Image (tube, rainbow, N blue to C red; front, side):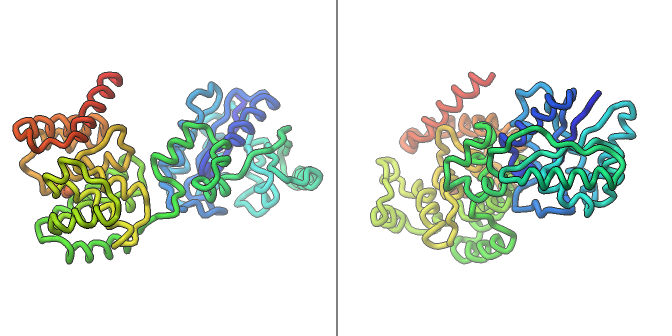
Length: 397
Ligand SMILES: [Fe+2]
Ligand SMILES: [Fe+2]
């Protein structure tokens, strides 16, 4: 087989990556191209608060309908730096009768002689150079020619006219410029939004410690312990479901921040700030602690992330079509380690890490059953949410 290996951070994968892979497939009669997702590359800082697993998932989503495109995740799991010569040597050993073609961007080829063991790379694979927008094609050809003279092996230019934008621009502009989303598959753009990637608001452990101190003062001791339980459960669930984990922890930390204030204060905060109050919330103002907690995010705790505020606002009732963080906080609030009165806790704690939508639905079932015995307390949003997930689960099968 003739196999293309396309290395990169793919942070995120965009249409140009796919088009380059397809151009290489056609021009060099390749049987397949593997996207080799870099783990800890020596040349680039990929951290940018994006979990490696998110980059892997985005590549998987982007190629799911492509017959000849595959993913290779070995560099994500390998210890140490992601040196290409190691990967290519491994591949050569694993598939001795296959012929390899290593695809790299024209920006990388300029520094090829600075890579670790470039001679091993060019010996293991034909190097295919992918042009980038604004390239001086003549200069690239000259560089290729020089390396062709210096190293054993072949260097070729992929016949492709680059017109897309770079991943770095997508990361910077994703939320400000709708055009950037056009350079991505819709499914990848949806993933970025659902997982809150490239957001301007990324939190770290010192933010958590600071908020924890503030909650210790704002909450009664039992509520504070519950809060720590929700924050740590949200953190572990976020790791499982590939959501920025400290952001989830911030949401857990602040979800009940408006729990230990008076009903009068909750109502007056809502009235002063044009936060709508429903009829049931007027009757049972403690139900407002989600909405007021969301307001407190910006107003009191300098947390400006919209997904965090939304998850806090809906954490008591849920809402139809919850996003990923909404679900994490809704579930974490119900299953945190201090809970012991809810039914089915063992199975719910298991489902929280295996089937999140089903877990949400099971919690709603139990909530509706509980509320049926206290009908005067039923918030219509809980019923709407229950009906939405009942239909969703039925259709999902
Ligand atoms: Fe709450
Ligand atoms: Fe809570």
